[in-house]
Image (cartoon, rainbow, N blue to C red; front, side):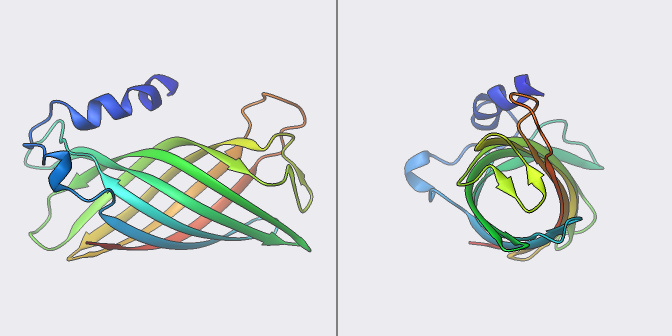
Length: 177
């Protein structure tokens, strides 16, 4: 997975079936998202994200194609009297199904990096401010809107013990420019 994370910038801007839009003609971000979720420890999660689609498609067929996006997010966690603030950057790979011109369901997965203000959250001892952000999800795009449901996991990948990690179920609504 780390190989995919490291190769994502190269793969997303090179090759593929789409003619890339020149960087000077494209905005830095093409979508804004708001997400809300909760952990099993009743920690509320709020995320504000900025996204940029990859400029390539791979494995395109009559069923669909593989592409994705980058997401830069600001995170606020609140639970059991604790607050935590974070920032994260994740490349996310998505398989978009071709169902109609206006409705595009997809499956997604990604691993990114995050930095948080605190190493404890409620009963969880995360041990480090740096955490990996893993995700899998389902969603659909219609018009300028994108609705998704995700499972996300934050942990330090055993860089330091204890590594309690946090599991989150998250709903997300994005608006595409």
